[in-house]
Image 1 (cartoon, helix red, strand yellow):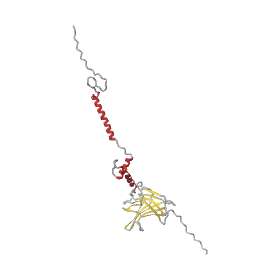
Image 2 (cartoon, one colour):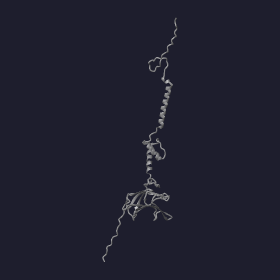
Image 3 (cartoon, rainbow, N blue to C red):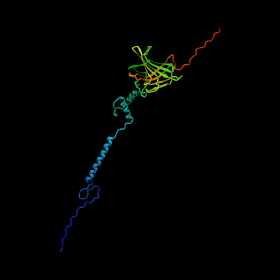
Image 4 (tube, one colour):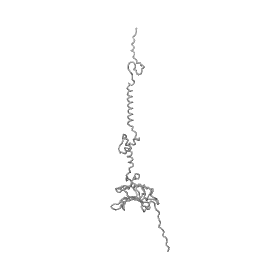
Length: 273
């Protein structure tokens, strides 16, 4: 008796490599590894991250500002008082630099201040404000006193000055004014006596200051009985009186640049009887 065995399944076709590069496997279907969804998502995520990094770097990047050209652009901007861009014509750079230099060379107008450090002496003839009106001294002179000198800065050609400021300058016996300097702050102890004097209704008015004012005074060297000086004085009055600039003070006949020795009167010879 014979037993029937089940028939074996038909053999499956096996794809054989043809051995040629780029040739599809046998059976006519190509197998691609990238067809996996996980691999595709990984590629998309990687591309997104690279793009985000590039965008972030571009957003935070700033062009260099400390270059010769950019410095010249800033100079041009300061000269114009507006905003300049790097794309403007480079031919304007010499003119902008010249404008900045001219502005720096412009003399500083004197200003009233009680800050000794902020007090500035312009390189111009002394001028300022006195009693709410412009003060332009026409004369400055020095008079010898027992304790030093008295400096007078006055406006007005009459016997009595219309407006004037007098400063007592103490010196040691035999000491000259050449090269002397005074820097007086409002709180300085033992400040020199300062007098403000003016005419009001043809009558002289006087106000004395012994502290509270600011003064800078620098003397140069005496020549021809005159001495150049730089002066800044600001008073703590309601009118904000001040004077600042350069001047040349003359020594009065009664005084001199250097102390003179006292001369004894000649002795009279006794006549014989």
